[in-house]
Image 1 (tube, rainbow, N blue to C red):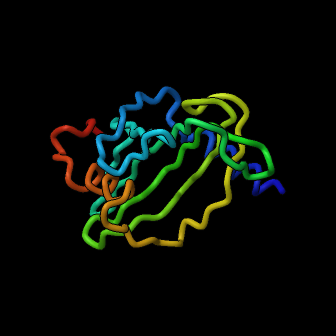
Image 2: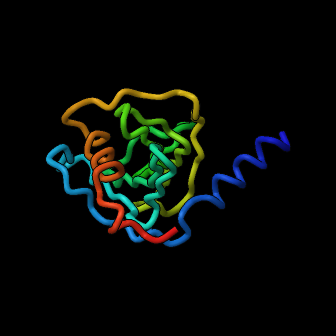
Length: 140
């Protein structure tokens, strides 16, 4: 139990305190369902891996982790640029829009890598993480 609390605390501390979300410019957005944002300040390269934060803001309530409805969700994803794959590091549902209100932390398997499907939001996120010139990334 103590270990679970420690993990939850680390997740909360590692979330961007005041993210400056910008709309993800992607033809794969789903108008009327959600808008996907990314925090450019969170783009963090480490060799061939790049980590970033994503926020999905839903137009209507979605099913929650424990039966509660949620209007937004944040996730921290890590992309393996050459292999075109990603893994989910953290995931949190929020009762309110834009990452506000009551939250529920989702269970993730950080060892589970996923192939990036072409013509998907994750493909656009991969492009942002792996194709954005380093010169536009914040200094480490």
